[in-house]
Length: 351
Image (cartoon, rainbow, N blue to C red; front, side, top):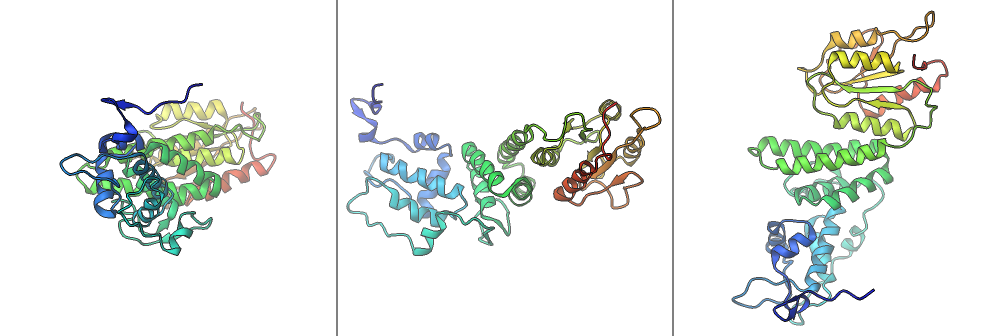
């Protein structure tokens, strides 16, 4: 197979002429504004500059920017990442003196396994994060850069290293909340950040939820549904992924399930539990929850009803009635549902 040759422009190769800021930004999957801001704030610029011409990025400069992307996506603060990335330049200008990174930076390049929490202002590239895991800061920076591949890799790694519950509670959810707050407080700016982040989080969760159940398919499943008018599905997708991680059968019906469709789903599937998600008080329907909790199915003489979990901040503390429970978080919901399958007779078979 022939070796690919450098692209030629006007008789000269790209490696000789370099590439423009826009071209290198497209190659890295970031915006040109991000590349320019790195140069202005941290001195991450082309090693060779000619007066009267636009900036041209040589192969060594591009390698340096690639390392900058990798480090910031792993959670390293941009200033530290810049000092480390500048040492990666393969073709430095002999007149430019490159200072080696401080000793602490060499340890920071490889993030520790434990939860490293900091309060560094601005380290989420504009998203209000507060005190969070380092992986959360890396995900926020990748989201602001609209760096889809980096988000996908960070989400996959977080779930593999920390498990679904910790990845959701300490990496995904804080970043999603920060993006939502930024959107609400900036006159509809950052909409694209929130949308792209949500899509990648949903993709990671659905990939995890596709795991085949370990519990026999003849056992009753768990039904998951958003109440009528409720469009927020990501927390429910996180629960689906957690159930799949524990090998439990489930049926996900998604957003805004009508009352008729919800009752039909319960009657036809005969679930051990039904999870009803409500994000706001306006969608929390206690009367519908009571009807679902009283739905009986199974053989005559051995009919049973499902346990209904009222999930989400829309439910009031007093909403739970007989046959219902209100879990305080993802882990509690998973433990409650898992307990049903630990008892042989607790989950009935579908009718």
